[in-house]
Amino acid sequence: MTTARGEAAAIEALELGHWRQAARVLREGQLADAYLGADLRTIARAMAYRAAGDHGLAWTTLGLAAASRHRRQPGLPVLPAKGDVVRLALPPRIGGAAELAFRTVRLIWREQGELSLLRRQAADHPIGSTQDRHILVLVFVEYLCWVEADRDTWLQEPAPDDESAAVEARIDEFRERRRDGFLRSATDLRQLARPAAGRMTKSVWDRADQYYGLRRLATRELAARKAPPWVDTATSADCPVRANAQHAWSIATGH
Image (tube, rainbow, N blue to C red; front, top):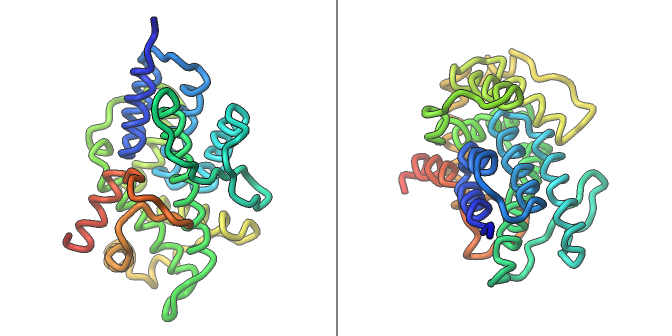
């Protein structure tokens, strides 16, 4: 009889932010619940998009996972609709046989909540900064948390398929400190907040003193935050935290 060992291992990896590891488990392992496995693959894909700086694609992909879970569990609480995707609320803790389903919903809730907060932050800016610079700083924070602080970035194996290779190629733009990669990601985040907004230009990068200037500003931004996860609604004490986000935050704060 097939057990849920594969799903449990994938969920644990995703809770820690190890989306490459989760994708490998889901690709190679034997799964007991095909529907749950499909939703976990969708979550892993959304995390990969976010690491690659494709925030809009991560947002819509998480919406697909949320809609799928809601179809399977119609009683799941949802947050008020904003017209673009289904957003799951954090349900009460469930144990026993439903534990894996609960953890999957909590994963979707966490990732949707973080992207929702990021979108809200990108639509505003602190005093003393332009909105464009603020968006570029937010994108640099994403890079610190999702690329630089992720050990799998530096230990990655050959991509298993064309889609994964395309994601890794976009991540490589950050690894190699390419200006165009950061501007691409900043444009994407800007348009997630304001769909009709134009492209981010090189002048914004230059005025922020380029890579090292933005790194300094992003480190200050991280240091001013509370500990992760960074969601737009109240969280519970047992909500798991991505290891890479925790590591980046700890470096910035000295904790």
